[in-house]
Length: 142
Image (cartoon, rainbow, N blue to C red; front, side, top):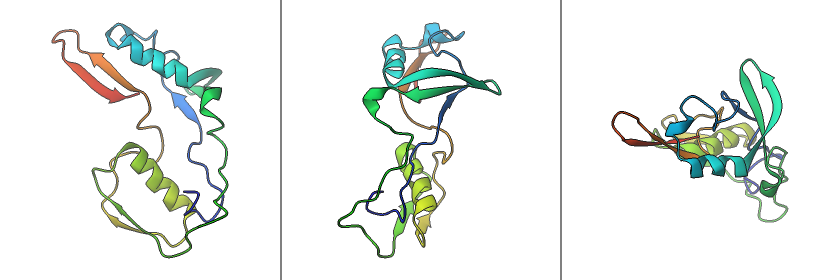
């Protein structure tokens, strides 16, 4: 994005979850505890609650991810931009497509709508949930 955007850009706005503490929910006993700990190494609760949702911040080790990023001073691309997307574009690809749409003037998207969300995190820490009756393990983004 530093080579494509028309102005300084922001990849991540805010981080919210619908559970106060993923390790203390009613289904926590079925989650992979190592992956839950990975979540805590990445995010920390802020104590802010709005409409039943809990705000989190990134841990300092990940840097200042919620701010705007400056453009590259050298080798910035100023030509026509075509972006190929389809229904199998998920996670970071969907987020990047949303940021390109927001910060690149005149971009042309070719294909179908992405399957990932442009608003809200559809990626991050992958969690394993073991279904109690079958023992089947389901993986999903946290």
